[in-house]
Amino acid sequence: MAEPRIPIKVNHLSCPICSEVLRNPVTIPCGHNFCMQCIQDRWNNSLFSCPECGHKFPSRPQLIKNTTLADLVRDTERCDAGCASGKPQHSGVSTQTLKRPWSCTKMKSPLCWRHRCFLDVYCCTDEQVICALCASAEHRGHTIGSVRGERKRKQEELEMRQIKSKQILKKQENKCRNLERTLEQIQEEARDTDDYCESVLVSVIDSLQRHYLSVRELIRRQEEAAAAQVQISLQTLQVKIEEMKKRSAELEHLAQTDNDVHFLEKWPSLQRLCDEDFLHALRGVSQDPLLPFEVTKKAVDKLGRQLEEFCDKEFTSISQTADGGEQQESGGETEQDDLQGCEASTSQSHGLTGVNKTLTDRTAEPKTRAEFLQYACVLSLDPATAHEDLTVSVGDNEVRMNLVRIKNPPIRSPKRFIHRRQVLCREGLQAERCYYEIEMEGDKAEIALAYKGIDRKSRTPLSAFGANANSWSLDRSTKYSVSHRKDSIQLTTSPSHHRIGVYLEFKKGTLTFYEVSDSMKFLYKVEAEFTEPLYPGFWLGEKCCIRICDLKLDRL
Picture 1: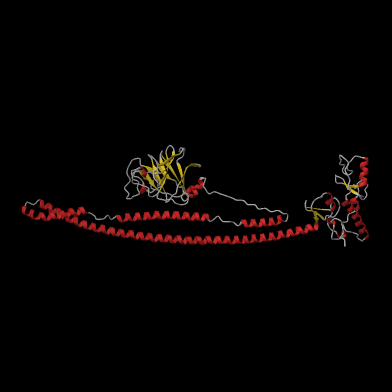
Picture 2 (picture 1 turned 120 degrees about the vertical axis):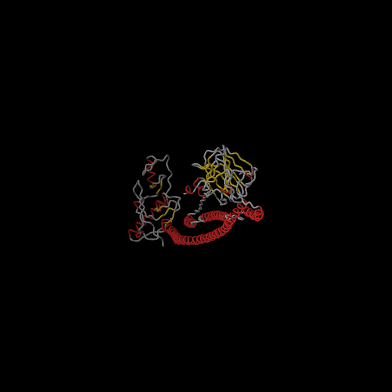
């Protein structure tokens, strides 16, 4: 059984010249259709132009019968005749794009606004719904399909997108729930970590408190023992003084006697007693009662410095380790893969594929002063290392040359520089990154870092900062220079500001000096392999003063 064809009214396929149904239809180059006889007659009597649009042709176009349009006219006339009699007479058609699986009397599809024909043809090239006349006249050579077939294909594509969209939505909802659970876990873990760290540090504080009480008890016992020793010595001395007073009176009485016999009899015994008194006075106190207190203070001072250095190092390490663990994958690649999968499934239906990637890179090297201040460390001068011509302030943050050379009170410490006007800080630096600043007054000074074993007693130049393998020094006078192992590199930069910044990357093996003002002015970078903690140190010229800057406020 033949499939029904599109019903088109005859006047839609009429010739503009004779107004009759097209007979032997031809299509001229401008696209308009005429009866072959009508257009030949027109051109025989006039110019070669289109009667419909007036377009002029330079020569007479060759006329060829439009067989598709002729078949369409024939089938349309049959369709109209069959529909008028109530007996459809649709016969088979030559072009499958014009077939319809339902009767024209039941057709509900909209009509083409130009040709008043059913829109049942789909141009895949232009992605437009058109009628059969549009397909033959304006979409020649294009990929043509039926509306119903294209709808079926697009419907399948839509269903694929729906399935993929539901899958992505489900994944996003699961991820949202996971993030909510992760947020709760973060809060819970933060509380647990806070409680745990508090318990650990409180136990450490309790331990220190117990040791502090033990030290106090030790000091009390030392006090009692020393006091008892001195009390016994005092009582013994008081008794001895009374005896000596009595002997002194006897000697006075004997010296005034006129009896020679009595004098000679008494003198040997008094002489022996006087000699014993002299020997007792020469012996004095056998042990310094204050020595135990001095030993205790030195031991506790050393322990305090060691604890402070250990805590600074370990807590810095904890902070850096924790900061490095914060950079985690957010899971965005999974979302991107899902979205790209959806796009790929759509593109493959048109024969297209594509993959895009973006790589990001960043450097953590500090550039501005604010970035350097993130690695600021706390330093304090060690007065026990200061040369006798130097005076360290009460807060241990400033050292200056004495205007009047008065020697410091003697300190029983092997750490003092004997022949060089140098001083070291208490803190040994070996964290991954450290930064500090100093301000100086005067014309000449040296800013150095040295190992603990630097020579402090020798008169040779090897005990100077930068003149040995144990120290590196930035020398500031009319020009800057950098020294190590007695080798000095003269810099072209002249001093313009009084604040110097020192940036140490211990593990990386770099030491960089900057002149600090509103910006960081690079001076020099030292590259070396540091094998032990580095202690900041300073050498002072005449009328010079160096102050370690407090960077805590600047860091806020």
